[in-house]
Amino acid sequence: MITLLPAASADIPALWELRTRALRSQCADHYDRLTLSTWAAAPAPSTYPALLAQGGGIKACINGELAGYAILDLESNEVDAVFVEPRFGGQGVGKSLLGALEQMAGEPAALHLYASLNAVRFYEAAGYRAMKNTQYQHPSGILLDCVFMTRT
Image 1 (tube, rainbow, N blue to C red):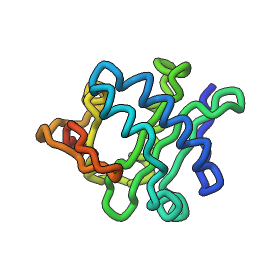
Image 2 (image 1 turned 135 degrees about the vertical axis):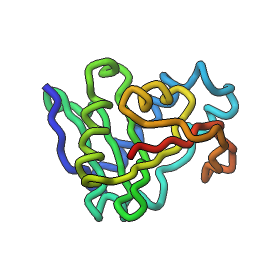
Image 3 (image 1 turned 120 degrees about the horizontal axis):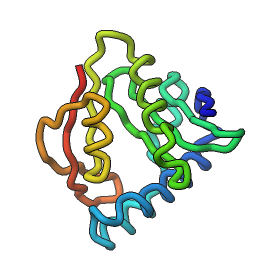
Image 4 (image 1 turned 30 degrees about the vertical axis):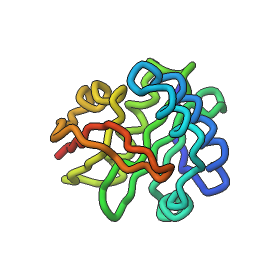
């Protein structure tokens, strides 16, 4: 059973480790090795503590174990992150987390995000629409190919 709980600043190290495992596992077929290694080595964003303090973070646990997390920027309605521990993939964790962010945003909220190439189908299945292929300027200095998506 998936349990959803608020994420706090104290959770950031564990969340970031999960994110790095997810990147290495799920993005390898969509990004070259150098891009992926640079992306995976980047530290947690300096914005995470404030986003979590505003109540924009959710963590998912299965049997008390961290299974994923998601973060929403409540001011801009941008989905900042949805990551699932690779061994919990396909068990509805990502869908539960995204649903929690959508509830958090309230209705009718127009959410938007920059989807990594491996995640586009996940977001499309959740009702998001691809608006344009673009590149995201990652804080590590790399440009990540991604898809700008929205849900209304």
